[in-house]
Amino acid sequence: MHPADRARENSIALEVKKDGLQQRQNGDWMLRFTVSSLDMHPTIVAAPMGARFACVLVEIDDNEMPIDHKAEDRDKWRALGAVKQAGIRCKDPVFWAYLSEEQVDGTVLDEKGAAIVVRNICGVLTRSDLGKPGFADQRVVWFDLDQKFQAWRARENA
Image (cartoon, rainbow, N blue to C red; front, side, top):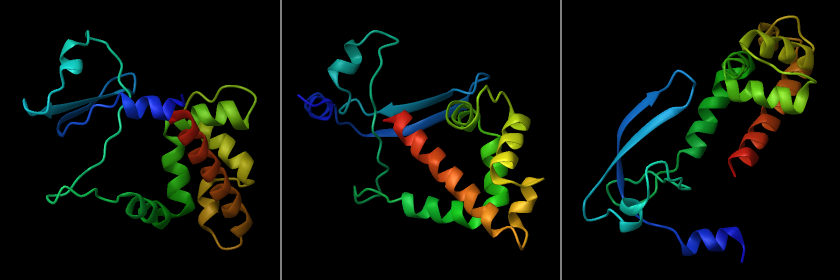
């Protein structure tokens, strides 16, 4: 049996409302939901604290229809441009892990290290060069690097 089939057979459907969001010092997120008593599944109630669940969430509108965020998010990201995108990515510890695993021999431990790697890969002296006329080839390299990161992240989350 394929893992997706097994997951589908054992899935628990319930509606939740986002109740809280907090980032911890180690970078992990604490996400809290409220579940109506009518929707609470006995499997969740009976599971011990610390039990792990795979989770798929789809935001719904007032008509119970899924809201499509992907196109909206993708357009916002594109509108930022290469300079801002590179700055955001270089602050992201997940991007550091990607660079360490896939792009360089060694560990990228911080924003400064990520910025050095990005500048070296893109062939620029500063990330701000990515927004200047005459650096179109370097922007293409940045966009390719970002696409590879997004694909890597999707594989890691699968």
